[in-house]
Amino acid sequence: MHFRLRWLSPFLILLIFFLILLNVQPVHKVAAQQPTGSVPTVTGTASGAFITVTYPEQINVRSGPSSYWYPAIGVLLPQQQSPALGRSPGGDWIQINYPGVPGNVGWVYAPLVSLGPPGVTLRIIEPPPTPTPVTTPTIDPTLAAAFLPQYTPTRAPTFTAPGPLAVPTYETAPAARTVVPMGLIITLLTLIGGFGALISFLRGR
Image (cartoon, rainbow, N blue to C red; front, side, top):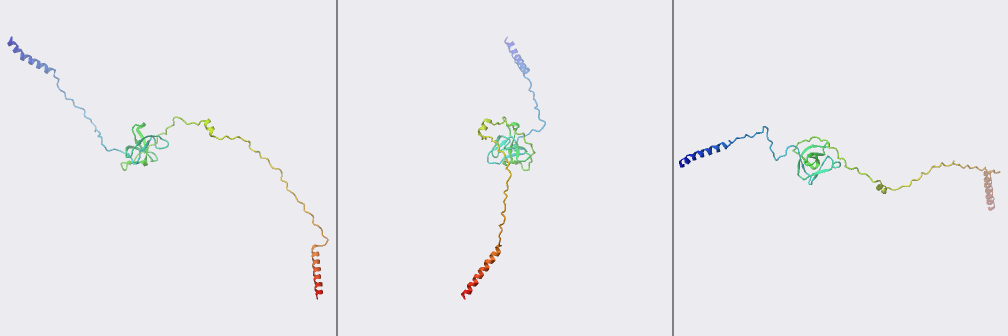
């Protein structure tokens, strides 16, 4: 009995080792698929046209190329950069890439920024349509009437034509008839005076 156990022990060991080998699966090497094209690398240098804020304070980014017709949608800080996409037809505004807003684009006033790199040119981009107001402001007629002066309507005076102009007429008085002419009377008086003066002279002698 003891001899039989000694003979079976190596046999059991070989059997167990064989079963272990059957359960072990071979290791398969999988080759990873290699890309056929070039893989882009991320660098710290911006490519293409870009703008740099040169104004000493923050500037507004607007939804269109006008500070009157388009609202502000964000800001840029001094020395902040952003990719430039194009110019307005007049050249006063530059369209930039501005993530987080509708369309991911905005407009900045060109004199407040510098364009780089040197010699870059931008395409002309037509401005977007102006936003329409949600509500149209109306004036309360009762409130407006309180500030308007009240005028009492009066009838315009009628024009009455003047009567005919009466031109006065004057009658000339007839000349008075003198029997003796005035020149003759003067001559006689002169002669009488001269005659009296002659008599006085003779009496004085």
